[in-house]
Image (cartoon, rainbow, N blue to C red; front, side):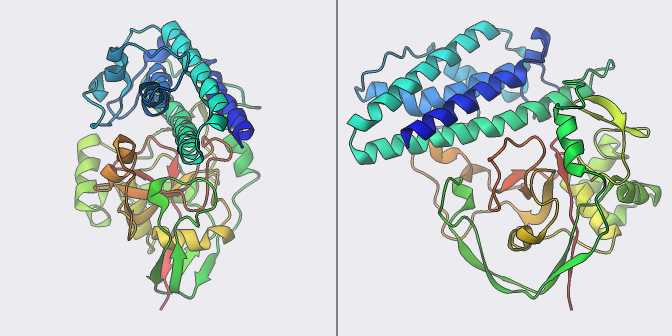
Length: 405
């Protein structure tokens, strides 16, 4: 078991370094907006997570490791939102952290990796309960880093989109991220049809087999009225029809808060549409009408659904039908009508690590599925992503649902 976990650790940690390989040194501190983070910060934060929750506690408990912790001030720099750990650098100013330099951060990553290797070597000599707890924390750290790998690319896209030179992360249309997206789309999205469900008492949530984040549990029952859900995601061409029908100028289609955001920010189209093209990690590319529309906020997805005479699915509806849905996983995250709230019986973990998900269960909406930037093996049917309803720098699209009489 430890051998498998060790292999995963090496693979995940190396993948983060591969993601920054195409970047220039100046890109590593790029922060385009308050909600995004620079690549160097992502590398530091994911490393801090392992030091804070695995290595430091074991050193303090007397476990003999050769690891030397980073300066205490680095915890202030790379803590994200763990209030129980201590104060932290303002999120809006992460792009100002020119120091520590990237070489120091990478050297720290190597020391942490070595410390984790030593910790894995010690596990067979520890009592089962303690070893099991450490393995669970290591797995959580790896899953956490995979989340940040996806965020790193989405944050980069936001930053690059603000540069008049329109830089590309990778113009490789054979193997880069955009190539992966185009391959997932394939030759077209096919005809739309409605998949019906009779409703009734269903079970959702993680079944307990394999890893899951705490917000995916406990598994519980939920009542659904009869509904139908679209077999595919809404396309660029369909969304263009919404724009042509003055969708962004009709307040009756929008939630009040969403309409205020549209007016304030001057939204007229999805986040990265530019004339007949769209901006992506490969720079400007032709916009394919049949491709799923992406980089929408929840407000935009909800307004489109209302215009189309439909609605967004609840997360329970999405989950029970996911096995029958084309484009369910790996293409785009999909907005649901569900607010991000705890499942019945939810209990956050004890200590600072319990702040991972539970403290954000307000003022956010749930997305389901995964996207073309999600690391392989990271997605599952019960996964609950969440963002504020005005967010649209993520790779998010929408799927329609409707009631059945």
